[in-house]
Length: 144
Image (spheres, rainbow, N blue to C red):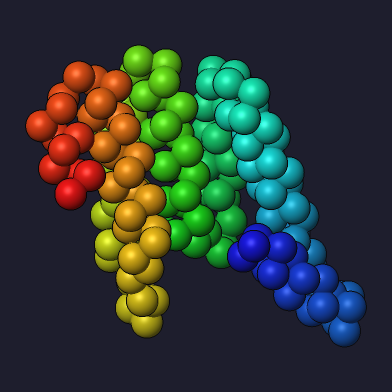
C-alpha cells in the first residue's frame, strides 16, 4: 500500500517537473525495490524460502542506497525474513530479524504512532520463530 502511494507521489512530482534527476533516480530505485519485494512474496507463498531470503536480502541492500528508507517498511521485510529463516531452521538469524523488526515497530520514531496491528504481527512472528526453535516459554510469552 505505502509503496504504491510513494510511486504515485514520485510520478506526480515528475509529471509537473520532469527535470528532477534526483527524484527520477529515487523513483527508479523504489520501483526496483517494489518489484523485488513482489518476487520475494511470490517465493514465500510457494514455500521457496531460500529464494525468498535471497530476494529479501537484495531488497534490504537496495533500501540502504535510497534516501527514503522507511523504518516500518524495513521492519515488514525483516518480519518476512524472520518467518522464512525460521522455516529454514536458521533460528538465531530469524530471532535477530524478529527482534530488530519488533524494536522498529514499537519505536517507529518521532511523529509516527505505534500501530497495535503491526506490534501484534511482530509478536506473532517472533512467537512462531520461538516455536520452531522449541523455545515454548518464549513463544507463550509472545502469544500473551
